[in-house]
Length: 109
Image 1: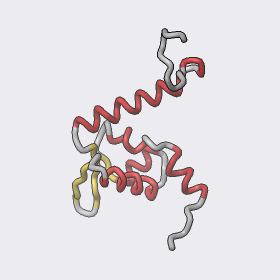
Image 2 (image 1 turned 45 degrees about the horizontal axis):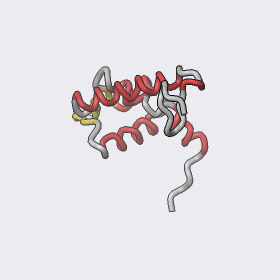
Image 3 (image 1 turned 45 degrees about the vertical axis):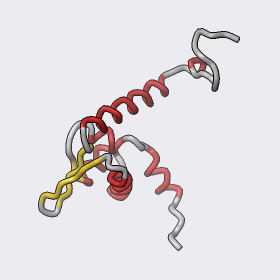
Image 4 (image 1 turned 120 degrees about the horizontal axis):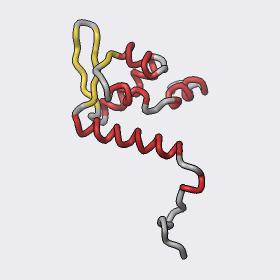
């Protein structure tokens, strides 16, 4: 049975769920550099990269002992960029701007 992750470890992996992906929209990076840019541990970065590789969202190349990661293609880059923009808009929107299920803007019942 695997140990239950500590609360700190869970928080660390969830603090910036898009940080690794956001860094990869700009440049190809190794795990160490990605961790520094994202502000999370190398372990958390490796975990996120493993998930991204499983879903074919990143590709990698080896150079000596280093492995460099990049987003798989321009489709993934466009999708991720749009998702990050959407998330940022959602954080800036006032509470009154959020709609309830079944509501549409400008339509009153």
